[in-house]
Image 1 (cartoon, protein in one colour):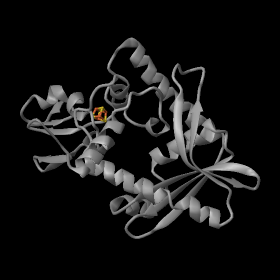
Image 2 (tube, protein in one colour; image 1 turned 180 degrees about the vertical axis):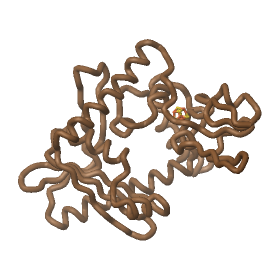
Image 3 (cartoon, protein in one colour; image 1 turned 60 degrees about the vertical axis):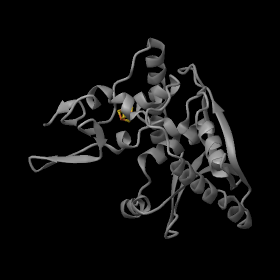
Length: 253
Ligand code: SF4
């Protein structure tokens, strides 16, 4: 076997590990998508090795930060695992924080997000973190009982960098509670052995999920969550079996 094939097969095997805990990164993901993972369903749209490499490159970029922080005098721990249990959940929440560091005698959590092109441009233009990144940080703030948490965005192509800072507050506690409810909802559907409703909508043309299509001069656009979902073909199988243009289950033409 070719050396590269061997490396990529090992990368793919790592992806297929059995799921035993909720992950903070899934707190705002489509409930049906996460339910598929818990069921152990093989992805109908498996991840491409190129995507795994892209993620690996992102992680490698994150790994340079602790050295810079240490040089700046911070006490730093990286890739710190955290396991959290809650009476409302039967399964634990397991996460790995990018960095925790000491500031004024107490530990704080820092999430690092590296992106490029449109991804980093949208952060620069909006001046705010992406909702799913904020939610992930809220999970860590409350799971680890941190007073403060931070998100650092790094542009891989233009080295643009910006940070957002959040203190533990009533607002984050409320959000954390809502996110726990989402995990509880997934457990409910697992217990009842029922498929959760879809939370997002795909645009489908002649048996294929497409980002968008036009009809009668109107544009129909699916949500990115479905375009990038690894269970999309499974999820939309009933619509993909038909010819025509669909917005979700609704036939447009
Ligand atoms: S295809 Fe869309 S609705 Fe279906 S599981 Fe994936 S994200 Fe959810």
